[in-house]
Length: 102
Image (cartoon, rainbow, N blue to C red; front, side):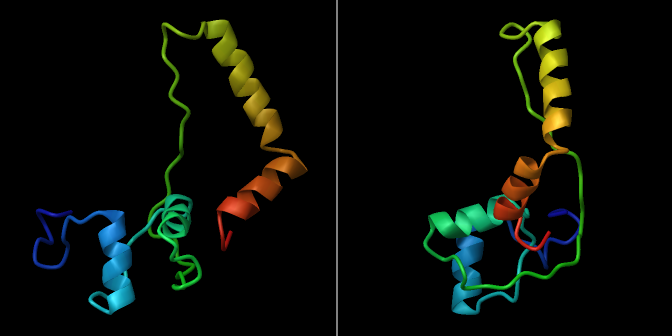
């Protein structure tokens, strides 16, 4: 994206994006729905900004586990347990807590 839109996009850190937005130096930025609220909280900037509900891009997330550390059997059990957990109220509560607007 930087190569194609170099005059419109800059490579800055999340913290720089937060600070630029707070100072009115930019109108907005793309942020991850879980990482951005967490980063804003870490920087003491929670509640200072609003988000737009439009999804720009969505992709699956993965747990990365070392092949040397975990057996294929463990991985299969882990995946099955995670799939079951995603269907519970506990998962929904966690998702709502860390994914505002969803």
